[in-house]
Image (cartoon, rainbow, N blue to C red; front, side, top):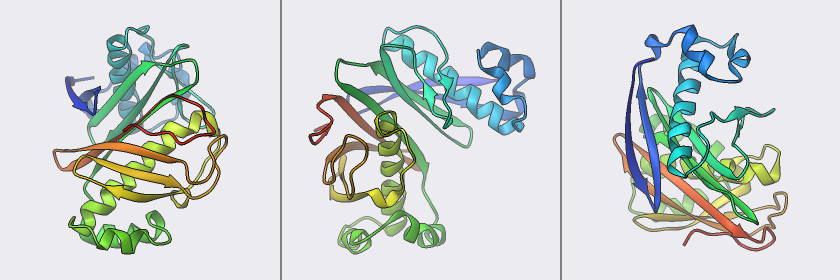
Length: 233
């Protein structure tokens, strides 16, 4: 598969960005994945994005001084990182991004998401599924155009889902977190209900960065007791 690798920094984390040409993927390319058999029935675009994400993840693991082993796939299609490491993968269109770090003694996790900017019409259609309670009124007080604000919150909640899933081990919706603070580089989400070991009102501060025609969000949770608030401040 034809790819181009680059890096960018969000917060203090290096993300590995892989541009790829889906039409260039060949079946033999997938043999590099130990779990390639799980993709046997996938469509071409799914095979390409999965492979691209795992290639980016291996670069991220090497950067974190981890093994050059493609993460496997769990029962909920979540990446299974090598022992002693944790990370996150995201892809949209022909771009895949990954980040990895050593896992610590306590709960340690990281979540990233890349969201191309939604159009104004799409943002209005999706708003009721993304925003809950006072969130829409709160965002209306910000200076961001609504489509950008919704794209940012959508991405942030996806990043938080990825970071918390290893501890929660169950699906949860966008209604489980709400935005409570926003600056030029950070935003804070607060849980509206308990999730696994995390009590309601636990807060998580994410970094974000505009990238091309979208936004990247990242939440980095490091070795904090799970019953307390977790934040990357």
